[in-house]
Image (cartoon, rainbow, N blue to C red; front, side):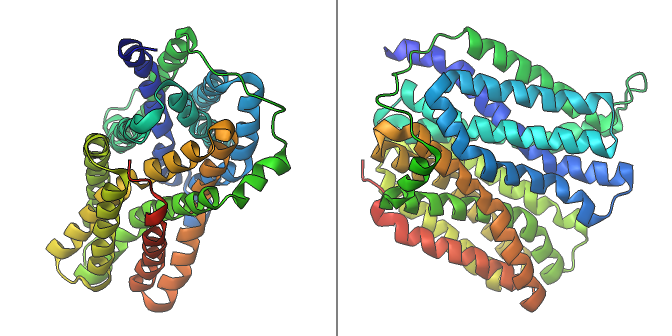
Length: 387
């Protein structure tokens, strides 16, 4: 496969990464649903929790499914499920419809995150895999970053004929999802056949006995935990330390996404011109400095700098850990991918522990929980290849 062909194939694949970012609409959407349906916080929080729950259930079975029907068909299936999840809210906003929509969005995203990365690995492979996956995360971040703004735009420009208001967000993403599905289906991608008998469920989990797979799994858990933890805790820190209102402190989340997006874009370049390990070390150092700033910072500039540092530093951890695990077992990439994506369940574990810690000693407790994740990533450094 020559470079020109690879470039052509990357267009539909990068569109799929954009669709992967649809899952991040649950944050802003759950707030609007809470307001429209007059829900309590605990009930409204069911929606984002559902997304991470399905990663725990579907990631490994998806890896097994890829062995049977192929990676491309599995990604197409994930797009179909995602498109259907985006279609449901256009017909109504009652609790049952939204519950089904968010569940399907989580299932579709679990299928997509498990199958898309190995599909890209089959097209790109080699030393450029980590940088390509990082660029995919940048494309994904564009969707994540745009979701709140599209929802706010729709909320101020209601469409009475269709009663959509903020839900126009689902319609816009639906159109992109349909386009991505068609383009990927029409793109011929050669896949290497699976050698030997497909792995069983037990055999998939046995791969966690391989040190690099297990350590990469925990690395992704820490990455996602710090990611979700920062998004939820950063505004609370600003409110606690600086006396900001919620509306003022909400900028912290946008700041995090801005620097995470910049990190993904520039990371795809740096990972091509310097060793993976060197860039990983720089990223972890930035996150360590961030934890210090979030722990002791009492001035706005210091806290904003800390949020920016963790946004940039954490932006490439997923790609590097994922690439290390995939390249370590080239004959079991489908199964390994399923295990790595299951690590996204860290987005449920970390916030839960952070909640208990912050109740006990304030937001410093939440920062200390995230700091444990950063410490673990320091221990992962020797496992990152220098190439």
